Image (cartoon, rainbow, N blue to C red; front, side):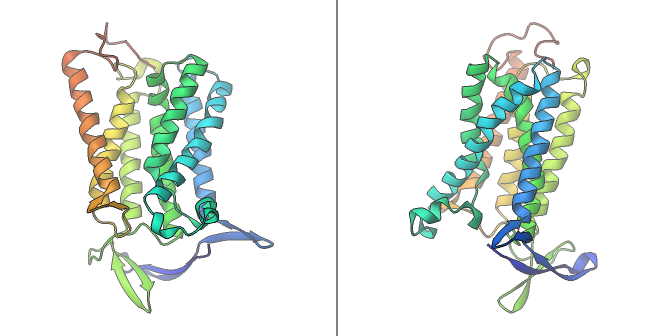
Length: 284
């Protein structure tokens, strides 16, 4: 779908400019910036996991085999989640499968992707929590970049504001000034990615990680807390009754993640509730 938007950031001195959601066309087939950005994010995420896997002697071929199932399942899950929470927007089976018209939800991708990782962990005989530690920071990479796809589509913005970093959008013949929530989430996830990787370490012997699954819990605690707050500013949230689904899930991710991190810290146990033998246990 083609979006041509006028955008500005007056408080930052950025004058109005026109943004086209389509990067280029081949005949009647249009390639959107959103698709390019998401694809680039998937590639970077895969390279990140391959790099992490080297620390545990897992080959790049094994990671690529896992990605061949996880990535399609993630996309299908993200679309299915969106469809099930937006049934009023679909009028035919063709609409459901028309993914090029937009409509993906990250939580659906996370759920379906996690199921695919569980399956591949069993097939490849790799500890699921070890894989989860490698993969979940890569999910942040996807969100860091993916939110800029929302920017090109002039979507995922927030309520009205007069803050200095407000984003101007020309809608319905007039300018509105809103929270650039796409930017908030991108920056929040970037900060989390940096901090968590400092904790994770860049060499096997430099990690602070105590057990497999710890990074997994940290990522989802961080993401859940940020999403819970930012979702409250958005104007396009998916609802079930009076509740913003993503905000509720963000809260659940945060509470469950922090709760388990604290439990394992004070009991000195790992994700299987087994005692951590020493500080080197689970290091990557």
